[in-house]
Length: 453
Image 1 (cartoon, rainbow, N blue to C red):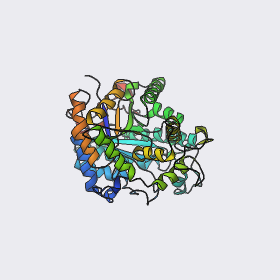
Image 2 (image 1 turned 180 degrees about the vertical axis):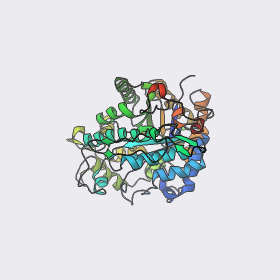
Image 3 (image 1 turned 120 degrees about the vertical axis):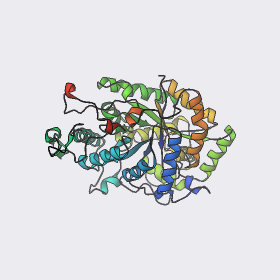
Image 4 (image 1 turned 90 degrees about the horizontal axis):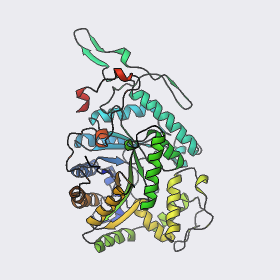
């Protein structure tokens, strides 16, 4: 079968553009409206997207003055969406820095069972002092330490997901034996960051364990992705940068002893679609005109580690900014934003406009054909296995993409026309169900049929 795109719908309250909530058609309370998210999930499923994704963090994002702030806890929301959809994958963000492996492994196993094999975990280490202070720390742990903790966290989580074998439940009513205790091997883990003794209290799931997604593009992030990730959400502004990242990550994955085809690279794109190019540009301008620049200046100064009042809206970024290795949080995004401003000689005002839609992800305004051309080119020229679609305004921009861009991708043979027989999220991403590490290969049995429905 010819290679086809993977599409993920990144859903964020009223849309990814920071000014989307100010448009007349937007509901400023949509961020806590279940019906809003059900509509979005069903729209993405109508477009046969592989998955949808919810970002999250254990702190109040930004300023409540800037845009709708606060968010429903993603695993709770996705459990509700699992009952409102049938096919689409459900990916939640959760932090390895501010969770425990046992509780989080249980929550994701539960979502995978409830959704019949559609769960995914976007693994983040969580940058920022704000989150650290919410958990009794004076400052965020160092970048390398966060990734070391994340690696042990993943190792423990996988031990927990494998602490039930597929045939643990025998359900022998005559003998009065419900399950085989010998088939629930406890982790008995003793490590640097975690001590976990007993088996998980949830059976092994339809997928074995959820699709593992990662979004960091720093050196530590790429090493982590090469070892663990099965899909990578990334941000690049140019085709050349995307090609370089793609080749590097695939090579690192092979060097780690894994099949490079088993990690899917999905750059983010904010498509602003119009019936003509001029109409798309007009929609883009309307959004930019609704940006409140003082919010953007404050956010940039925080990102760039500058004192308040340093930036001049109509001047360039100042010289002498810290190097990436001096930054502890969001290293790759810091570098991307600084390089974008330098490369295109943007003023602070222009940079804020460029970041308003996608926070460093590629923003593209054009006709449905032009959007499809860009997606197709990146896919064909070794820059992407698919895309993380980030609608600027919700629900309208997602509906436009599904109704106008997806049919073009289908007509070009780049995207599925229906979901077909592949039922789990792993199957849709072309990934095998992981073998249980406690079972020898010759003894490993296929999942029972009930686990694959």
